[in-house]
Amino acid sequence: MPLREKNLIQKIRRSAPKGRALVTGIGDDCAVLRLPRRHELLVTTDFTIEKVHFRRDWLRPELVGWRCLTRGLSDIAAMGGEPLAAFLSLAVAKDVPQKWVDRFLKGLLELAEEFEVPLAGGDTAQSAGGIQADIVVVGSVPTGKAVLRSGAKAGDQIYVTGELGGSAAALARLMEAKPTGAGYFRRFRPEPRIAVGQWLRQHGVASAMIDLSDGLSTDLEHICQESRVGAEIEAEAIPRAQAERGKKPVALELALHGGDDYELLFTSAAAVPQEVAGVRVTRIGRIMRSSGMRLIGADGKSRPLKVRGWEHFRGNL
Amino acid sequence: MPLREKNLIQKIRRSAPKGRALVTGIGDDCAVLRLPRRHELLVTTDFTIEKVHFRRDWLRPELVGWRCLTRGLSDIAAMGGEPLAAFLSLAVAKDVPQKWVDRFLKGLLELAEEFEVPLAGGDTAQSAGGIQADIVVVGSVPTGKAVLRSGAKAGDQIYVTGELGGSAAALARLMEAKPTGAGYFRRFRPEPRIAVGQWLRQHGVASAMIDLSDGLSTDLEHICQESRVGAEIEAEAIPRAQAERGKKPVALELALHGGDDYELLFTSAAAVPQEVAGVRVTRIGRIMRSSGMRLIGADGKSRPLKVRGWEHFRGNL
Image 1: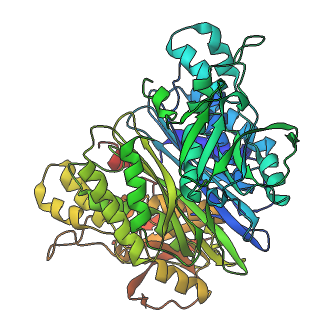
Image 2 (image 1 turned 180 degrees about the horizontal axis):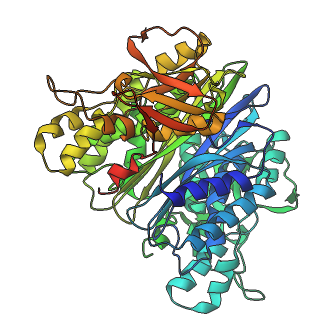
């Protein structure tokens, strides 16, 4: 193993927080973990690729690292689970400064510490060009209690946490080379909604759940397909982010289709509080028996809601 | 998600073998798995990167897929574990033919079926150039029984399974553009030693174990470092592969430092059979109290064994 990769592993080994579940971490062929009794295992993997998911000149390395882990933790949140450990596979080209890698890792470990998730292993390699990171997060959930995408029933109401479209709005600004929005995008540190997901699972509130990584229209379609139902969204009800302080909310299109929000989208037949674990929860529509998704506009008229995911924006990176 | 990635996921979903441990596979935010009672969880991740770990003009796509999963399964074998599920994160550039991706997946799934390991999830993305695959394998082992790298004691004998250096020999041929060795390299399908690893663990035979992915000198050093011991290897005892039928064995240097063999290296104070689960087992040296690694040559003279891993060969890819 080249010296650089060796040093990186040593660095991770020293700085990663220790978790209760971890029996043996970095330094063996596999990590060994203990699962709580009567719990099932959750596993999720997510790529973060330079020029596909981020650009080095647009985003501080700490934020790339933070978001890299957010993607994994957010998937655990969407099952109502508890994260146990993370694994990072990182490939970096020769010409990427060591400083960039150090700062990337700093951001990732900052979030790992916030959630007491040990970085328990992974792989490092020299890439043939650019930066590729694959984050794996394993977690646990009481047996049979994971909140799936497939549980939505006709008549269930549809909810989201937080506000949508902020990340996409700032990205759109960056692509137009308007630096005013850039500050928001550069600061934006999405918080995985672990506590919200657990509360919803523990109280049996969510019938189906997904995290908003690809955009509302794309992720709602996943719930509809897996649950074999349709959905009706009220445009006016969608909580839209303010990308700049004191400015008006982002365009509806960005809240509908923009990704990287890492809020939770869930369905429920039960009473849902307006705030869960300190996070705002908003009803935005309902699940329908008939398939397909519809959007009710401010004028009260209903039109088909087309899927236009995150890749629509990312295509131009 | 672009159509191509969507199709890929559908394809995997249909063709992946179902495992006993899998509760919910592809199609949700996380995979959900059940661990056997009184077992701990094993997790390993390994990158397979074009122009770093393989070249498209040297290796059939089926073999790249096969080896990609072998890397993960081999790590489970080295703990004495049972593989439960695999996860594939695959990034592919636009200009990579769909046929290549299909054949890569075919090879990977062929090995997955042999070991009844379901492909339970992963991620797909467009890469900024070339092919990057990250394989994650999760497995299980009875609580407290994982065979670690850190258990070697002075006086233990050192063993390897199978034969070493074949993969490196063929790669060396390819790099010299000598097509005679190429056939072997192209055919070479390393078998993860799952059954051997489990037998050694069940019979309490192995005090420390690692899989030979980076080369004997590098991987033996890992055992020495984690166990805080030294080692003495007998050059004449190392089982060297025959890269071509009927030809003489590969050079000692290749058996000492060449990687990608995926055999097991283990230490033991017990009696070890010459064959385990149909695989030859050979004693090649012993663990010493004093640190450092030494090589005893055919002339009976001892010299320091330097670490010269796989990257030495791969550097020129």
